[in-house]
Image 1 (cartoon, helix red, strand yellow):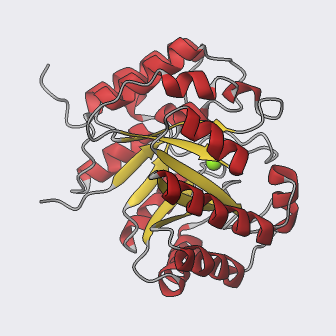
Image 2: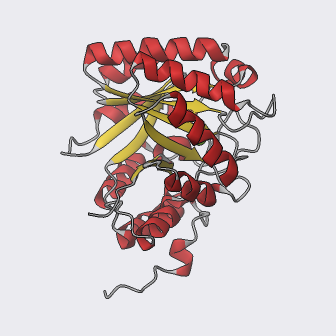
Length: 301
Ligand code: MG
């Protein structure tokens, strides 16, 4: 069996949270259904954050309650604090993704706390998730650089990963929140993660802000990362990271991995169809290239 790479589509959350178009809950549910129909087993569906700060995610509770339960499909809710955890549990979310931040300046703007406090909080969230029987993973934001502080020392990222792994997080993502990472950084920082937290599952979260996103994904896979976040069509951007642009496109990533002999479980024609639908809904051409250029080789209809 080919090596499996678990792609989590984050379009409904990271993709839409800052979009000029406020997609209806119905349309979000259809987007999620289309992703699942295309073979995605992991979809980050929303975030349980303050709707005053992230208005696009104000329907998190209703949306989560209306998701159809499907075997093998995991809907993930992003959250940053215990209030978010309570909401996620009340809405029936079975998997949560917590956020820590590697730099103090970004932690202050994103979560109104220090980097260290964000780690303490993620550990408290893990305990609450365990008590509730909910799966949990965690990400380290600004793991490759901070829009306010600049360089983030690799030692700081490794120390955070060590604390999170020791607390029991089975999976840790390094997030390039502002899209500054290069393949060299990716190899260095996932190497440091593997050394600091041996045995933990590694996930990469890349933004394509400087067009290095897909190269970073490939670099991550080459050093044993088997979880990657991506967004349908390549939509996205963080409301608290100036000039942040989209995630790497799920479309192009799935194509690259499939043609390179990796298994993703994704049906490319269905994924492109979903991406085209999303572009129509958002009223613009999305960044992903696969739908424009066409799948190669062309599959018989
Ligand atoms: Mg992001």
